[in-house]
Amino acid sequence: MNKPNMSLDEIRENVSRIDQQLLTLLADRRKLSLEVAKSKIQTQKPVRDIEREQVLLEKLVADGSAHDLDPQYVTKIFHDIIEDSVLYQQAFLQRLANPDNEQPLARVSFLGGKGSYSNLAARNFFARKHTKLAEIQCPNFKEVIEVVENGNADYGVLPIENTSSGSINDVYDQLQHTRLSIVGEITQPIEHCLLTSVDTDVDKIEVLYSHPQPHQQCSEFLRSLGDIKQEYCSSTAEAMKLVAEMNSPTVAAIGNANSGEFYGLKPLKFGIANQQENHTRFIVVARKPIDVTALIPAKTTFIMSTGQTAGSLVECLLVLKNNGINMTKLESRPVLGNPWEEMFYVDVEGNLRTDVMKETLEELTKLTRYIKVLGSYPIENVAPCEIDV
Image (cartoon, rainbow, N blue to C red):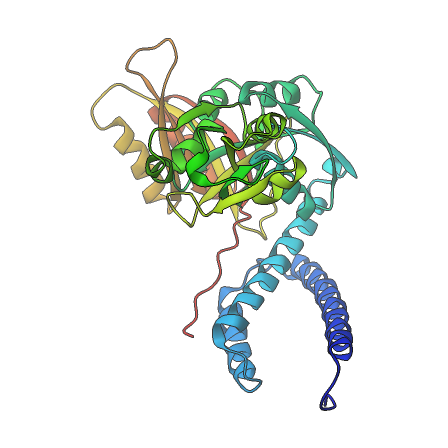
C-alpha cells in the first residue's frame, strides 16, 4: 500500500513505476499472442475466436468491478488490447504467406504532403507491419497510382470512401484502368478542426482552405460561418502549408490538429465535421497481388460490367446470395466513352483462395460482359465483440 501523505513527487514516481510495469506486461502479452498465432498454424484455427473474446471480456469486467473499475473503462482498454493482438497475429501470418514481400523499407506514394490524411493512413498501416517508410508525396490520385505502376514506389495509399461524404469517385474511376492490385485496407478516423497560423477569432475568418472532401464533410459548420470564401486545394497538407505561409488572422485551413503542428498551425475550433464519428477507408495498392492465409478474414474486391438487360445486376447479386458470400460494398460508376453503361465495384467478405470464391467468380464471369478482380486482402477492421455492461 502507498504510505499516507505522500508528496506530489513521490506520487508521480509511483505512477511512472506502474506505467513501466504496464509497458512490460503489454510487451509480454504481445509475445504470447505471437505464440498463439504459431499454434494456430498447426491446428489451422482462425485468428479470431469471438466466443472466447466475449467470455474473456465478461470475466475481465467482473474482475475489474472488484477493483472499483467501471465496465466501460475495462471494456475500452481490452478492446484495444485484443485489436492489437489480432492485427499483430495477422501481420505475422501474412509475412509467412508472402515471404517475397518482406522488406524493412517500403516506398509509399500518397496524396498531399506531410500530415495529410493519406499520409497519416500510410504511416498507421505500415506501422502495423513494422515497416519503415520512404514517403512519396503526390499532387493527385492519378500520380499516386502511376508512380507505383512505373516502379518508383512499392505501394500507393488511396482513400476510397468516407462515412460522411460517401464514395471518392475519382479513386473509383482510376481503378477502372490500373494494373495494380489491392493488397490491404485501413480505416482512419478523420478529426477535422479549424487551423490558423496566428491567434484570431472564428468570426474574423474570411477565406477557408482545404481539399474538397473536408469542405463537404464540414458543410454544416461552414454554413454557420455565413459568407465565407472556400478555396479548394489538392490536399489538406497543401492547405495547411498555404495558411502557414500567409500568416494572416483572416485565413484558416481544415485539417488534423496534430498534422497542423507540422506547419506551426494552432487549432481554433475542434469537432467541425457534420458527423462526429467520421472515418475514411483507405486501400493500399501494389504491382503484385498477395496471398491471404485462410486463418484470417479476407475481403475480395472486383469490378464488373453487366449486360444492358432488365435484371442482369440482380442475377449477379443472386450468385453471391446463393453461395453465401456477404457483400459489403456496391458502387456504380459510368464507363468512360460508353454512354449509359455502368461499371460496378463490389467488395465481398471472402478469400480468393477458397473454392467457394473461385466458383462464385466463375459463375459471375458467365453472367457479365467484363469482370476483373482488383485484389484479395486481409480485413483489418477488427470490430469489437459485444457484451452487456
